[in-house]
Image (cartoon, rainbow, N blue to C red; front, side, top):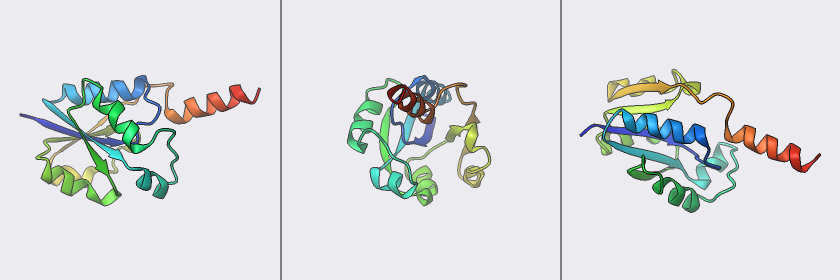
Length: 132
């Protein structure tokens, strides 16, 4: 069985998230998603609309996702790869090169992002609509 791992905040799920999860799952048999905790998001200066618990439930409801694990810090990736017997680590290509250090433990693939969509764009668009 080929196991895949990706990480993210996955707040305000949109087609870009679904495309990433689908393409990641297409690379293997079992997709593990590391989901940033509320505390880790705070450390990253990233604000989520949904709580960790709600984001976890949403992700677990997506058919491409087999397992959700908490992401507490930047430093846990090697441990997660080893603990979960990961074959392929996947991230969006906006992170290209950032996780090459994992190549000692698994294959690393950067997938192209879906153009024209992001959680930041959605939040900006919603903010501008409410302030017009």
